Length: 45
Picture 1 (tube, rainbow, N blue to C red):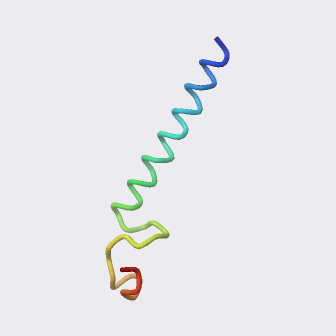
Picture 2: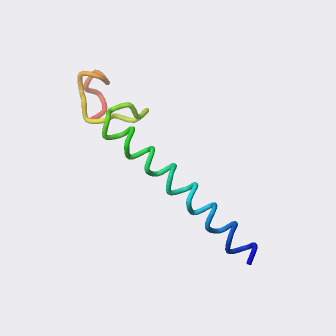
């Protein structure tokens, strides 16, 4: 039973991290190029 609870917590934490990364990417705040070539100088594509 404890293993299931820990698995659910780990899965939930991973889902929140991925959700946050997607949100940052869409808003252009990620460390990687967000498609705005004016922001990165155009060398990302």
